[in-house]
Length: 305
Image (cartoon, rainbow, N blue to C red; front, side, top):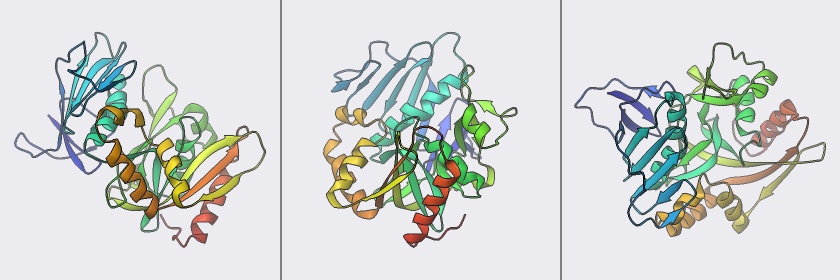
């Protein structure tokens, strides 16, 4: 058995995870989450309350099947069972465990999940949220290159008191983003064998303690040549938070929608929310980082790593 730490949880796993922080552990070690290889019903779960094309959800379980990869069963916020399909590589299995499966498990544990990253600023943190492909990880990597520490990449888990729980000590970057940022990829591990997306280790710039979330920047793009910043206030914060929730559809079968809306309201009162619209073409990354740093200063957050 392997033991790891992520999202302030101790994870016991039959699978090896190079993405996670290892812990010294033994057979009698107390853990919060177990990851095991086992049989998963090919038909799904009993009495699903909601389903998508490849997943089913009820109040206790989340079932997912990924063609040519594996079937997964996540239950009770403490168990992930994986049934790999023949010939699959472990890299592909881990991508789905650490993404959709971990997202479902954290929802079962009543955490609020932003589809975003988080970086340390002073004694607090900020998040970059938005749809896939909008540049969240690229932007975080640009801050990383300037010496900032990172708490989360893609899945930003926020607890009931507004703290971001650190996830994994890596950022996932496409080849073109790595090239733009002058990050060498020859020695880096691809997240899946046939995808030009790489795991960039954070090393000492991974911040492993929870921090208070102060600002969420929602990233969008347009066909203009410059950036637009706009602060969102009051009740208007709710919709952007809902729209940028990680795997929000899963909540429909968990019986947690009312609690989720309450979480949205609580979080909206704790944070500043800023909408950033960037040029769709010719991503002026350094300029965007400078503008966000200026906004951080204007809000009284200390610009420190």
